[in-house]
Length: 252
Length: 126
Image (cartoon, rainbow over all chains, first blue to last red; front, side, top):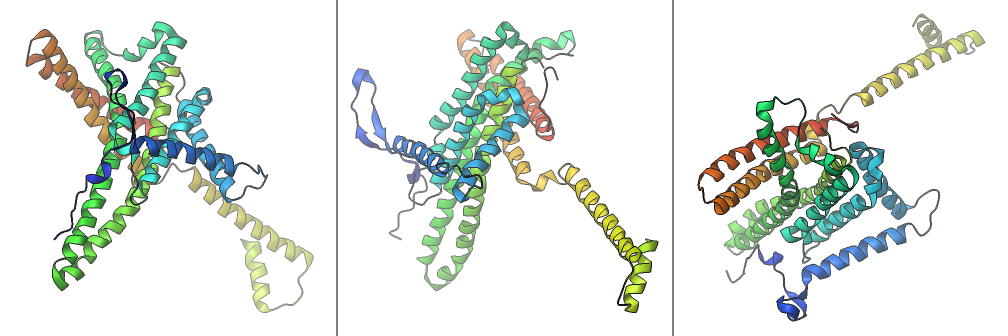
């Protein structure tokens, strides 16, 4: 039993380049940052390489690029209307980043960027910041009507305003929490079941054959994680559209 | 129907040559059968997703509802704790805002459940 099993180890952040502490803040180029740069580069090269031919009848890569474009475009149109298409670049960037980050995390020995709440919270704050800034810029104080639901009796109105306020504040939290928690829990579950295999094979012949059970579980979990990876990127994009729709049409 | 039965009967009798009218009758029968199948297929497609609970979008909705519920309660608790800390009225701020947060999360969940079922973009006040 000399094998060390640590399901949390995969999430450790370490500095690749230590930049010291200019101005009292410790800075460093971490493995997380390196993966993020890599993901952005991968998206850039995938999209430019796939669309280099611009053939009328798309090849495999080009049709993948076109599919991702059309998928996000139809999501934006169906949830935020045609007006929402002005936010298409933002939604598409977020969707592709989360999708690639989740899938890169599925490669063995790689690092899952979206399993850190710092990253997902930053993405969620970008979305909510856009909603608030655009909402006030476009509608002025009328944007505050978002917090005043119509058709509510006067004596209930104060409660409803507070509830609407809390529900608005909970948006960035639910947006970041869901992505982070799903990726973290999924990857830990996979590591734990993989650890069972190692432990059981160390326990003689019976354990060796018994290890088939956790192995089957790991195979099933891997498939599930691929589904979750794509699904979470989709949910992130849909919710971004729904919140942006509030910025476009604040009146309830 | 009549038309088809007649042509079928003749076909099974093994008559080698068919007259033009019989052929066009068969064609009409085939055309109407095709139309019926196409109409059925169209009706199936127009049907709103037969069982949303077993599809990927159903799973997406489940993820969303879970996180929505947790987040509302968390924000309520956080606000209550902050108000207690600033005004020094513990535990009343926490009690009131935890309940309000619970209410907000239920509101959010109901809104989420409604929004995923609706496919058309919401226009203005709704």
